[in-house]
Image (cartoon, rainbow, N blue to C red; front, top):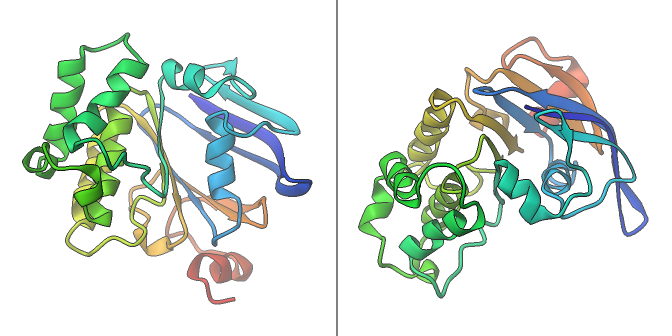
Length: 234
């Protein structure tokens, strides 16, 4: 589904990604773990076309997407929920969720997509008429993910989906991610807190200073330098 090979990205003449490679298939949950500033968001923004790579390849379903406009990447079936949520405060919850159905008109009907979003996050149905600027951080996060889902994607990029959430909201997000996998969606999730990584994740890539320093199954015996990164102990 998604395959990144030797991706190099600069921002304002600073090298942020240094030849990273990773892949994710349909129905898989793959986690990109690293401290703040390691390059996780840069990876996602490059996949989505917001940033142009210096070199390397980003392939989706076998086709190169690096350098394509963001709206074309979205129309291929790549949904993105950024860390900051970026919910439109002047729009209602219902309007925010509906937006993606306009971006990618093909696929399932808008009504089917919206119904699925509310089925996965039923709490949002109660807030459908509420303005985006009236939501808590956790509620905005749910709206952001639901909006990515109504794109009718085959791959979801979730940047720090659990960051800063109250314990009451975390199970709803976790259950939603599990349902995405059951629907056959690929999920690439970025996290700075290893304790938020689901135990049944297929693979984990550890990113440090723009480089993948380890990959394997969550819960495996980590080398000491990897353990320091994922626990934030150094």
